[in-house]
Length: 190
Ligand code: S3P
Image 1 (cartoon, helix red, strand yellow):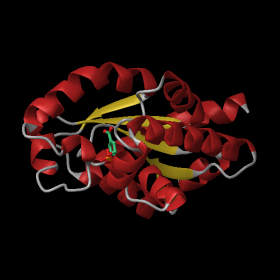
Image 2 (cartoon, rainbow, N blue to C red):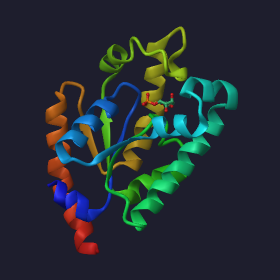
Image 3 (tube, rainbow, N blue to C red):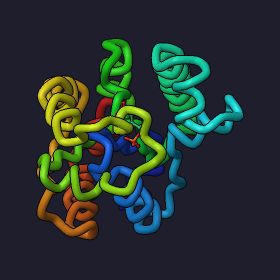
Image 4 (spheres, rainbow, N blue to C red):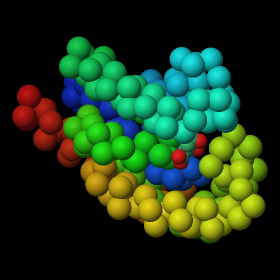
């Protein structure tokens, strides 16, 4: 399987709301396939030299969104030059810009981890590092984000996994099974 991923030279990209398990699933996918894990938020923090909350505070969300697009463009170019086989975990808002959604559809296999509100609430309960959730009513905020973004995740992804009640290995198995078919298609197209 990892051989197929490597020869396809294309990434598996995880999208979904904050708390949907992108980082955890990304780590397990990386362990299972031997492919490296690239966390877009971590790369942007490193590039700017500031944490995500500080980037939002000092430079603004719009600036952060531009950095996400620039990084996606760069990662897409990497595919053309043969450096594209990664597992990529994204920030929850990566689907907001239309250009990003197009790149996500072109890049490789984009998987939407779709988690219900109750589980999102549980999983983000202790998060201090998410500027959008530093609000009085986290439930209302997450509910609004689910409504606003679900159609965007649909547009940007090839596969949706309703993973609220699933264990991580089960999610990973589902992704790898689908990837096998998906990347064969890519391989045929050359
Ligand atoms: C954001 C999600 C965060 C991070 C930033 C904005 C969002 O990433 O990119 O705080 O708009 O949903 P995670 O989804 O990894 O928490």
